[in-house]
Length: 281
View 1 (cartoon, helix red, strand yellow):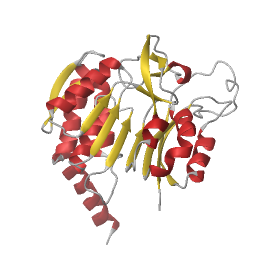
View 2: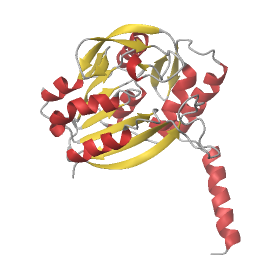
View 3: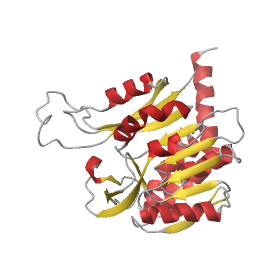
């Protein structure tokens, strides 16, 4: 095939993808367009692809939708039609909706620490009549107690001890010890962790009880240039019997004022979020 013909076919493919969007792509475009003109941190509801989607910050919903419904970063395969799923850091439930569409009979528990966001999560479960989905408004942690939580108001809040963002609003929230929950389960088909830096501490606490977990999808936040946590967490997954794969890295902009400020390279990222998928053979 000539280079001219091959180039023409590729160009035609690009035009076709732009003109004939999938329902998931069209929904993402709708969310991104409306989100760009909606004031930040303004609660509301929008109809997308047959879902009533309640939100607290529309601008951050569009990338969540793209990651989940367009790029399918949370797709996973299991032989059981009713997998047990623990969705830790569920936000308003975009991933929860996706996984219930993939496995309608799934038994899911969705955890969200920010009480305002947890209320929208509960609304999305109710409005879309999702069965066998429980919502727990608490932070996933290494103890059952209370802790200080930085409520950023969208998708970047976190437990104060692990938070590295610029938000300042602090609230007290209940916590649940994930290890205790795992110990009470016969099996967990998917453990999804998006808990903004607390995942290292939580997984370390859970290591003795990870035997019931078949697959893990986790975002590893590595923000401390002097004390990198990702290597130890990956070693933990290996010790627990998992294989793992790199699913992509997102750099987090930061201006270092202390250690690392004098590095000699032009534009290295000192902070990043790495998506990791782990599973058993």
